[in-house]
Length: 242
Image (tube, rainbow, N blue to C red; front, top):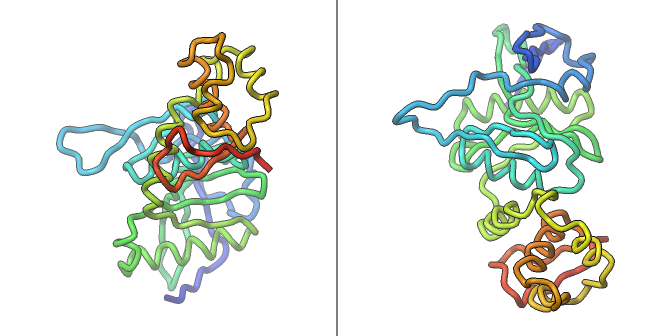
């Protein structure tokens, strides 16, 4: 579906103190302002609501980040586990664009600040992507985002094994819960080629649950990697991160 986005695309941002900066010209909006933005929409829970909302403590941000569906939580988990993602902003701004004589509005789900540059993310179930209104909105949003040289991503259901494994490993994301000396010893060890089961037994003088949790923390933080496209087991082989 073609779109004709008339310049300038405008943007509004809600600061963390709840003040709003409105109708900024998109090409010149400072990235620092977006980095510190609060969620655009008011966050509510109510009995019988159709969507699943919540907050997730992000190791990347060091604070809570909101989501409005289980699918959004899935994308948030994967972003939090990705070493190239340096910051995450939920509902970072309100886009406004003049298209075919009408003012169109859209609030993206996430802004990811990565080593390769900013990525604007919209999350939507795969079965809804072909709806005309969804396709139209994502088309003009992509045009606006990429006009600034940023990346735009529409994200739908992931590999279920990958997501479940990352969800499990997220339980080991809080670095302060682990013995720093033990983590340091395991970081210095040559884990490349070891199975998870062997890695769990590397320090027999220490309680096995502590060693296991520290190894899983290193896996979460991508000090080492393993195949996540099948259920994790003690037979999984660890590989050094390139």
